[in-house]
Image (tube, rainbow over all chains, first blue to last red; front, side, top):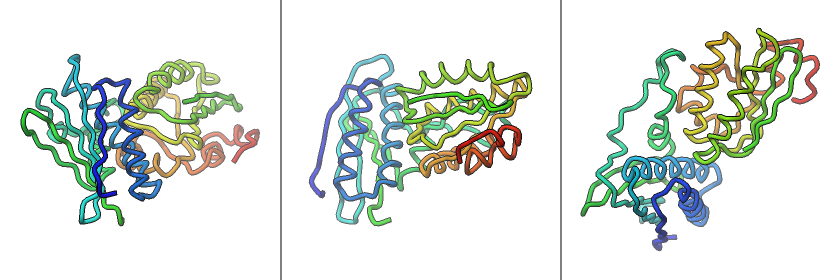
Length: 139
Length: 124
């Protein structure tokens, strides 16, 4: 699957599942094993939820999802939105060494995204947030 | 997402099944947290059986953290058992080993924290 597959969905939490299902279908079609697809699924859910909540907040908009494989054998997922500038990678990481009493209740989503795929990059381009998740197919 | 409970001696066994994502996490919160208060007796313990839980995102981890904090306040022990591979990975990344004791099987959890409950437990 070197061709580009794309879909656009409304930037709403109740629509995120459609985007996740699309990426899962693309990753499966690209030949990634189920265990890797499951990790991608989780990373994409976390990313879409973050974009809906923080790039758009209460505002309406769309998220454009593109999936492709590149020449170096990477499966690439791009999540593009036109919300306010939102660099998911600049979010502070939760303190996981704290005692249970002090431990933050949430904030694990970004950590999961970073950990479950091989590479995450963010760029702001032409008033768009572009978040790219990359997964090596051969690993 | 399903959440079923069973009382075994002084242990409440909570079986979670299916998927806990950002759409179902609230349902888990509404079902699980009230159950923790009714865990058998004042010294009742809780075992979360995750053997049929296929998927859990950070929204679900948030609920588990709330459950752990809730139990800590009540000085009630809560442990988890039987994580599938994706959940093992998620627990590792999130350092949930510092939040819960994790056991390979429900039986192992029961034998460790409540042998009386293990003797009446019929599963693995």
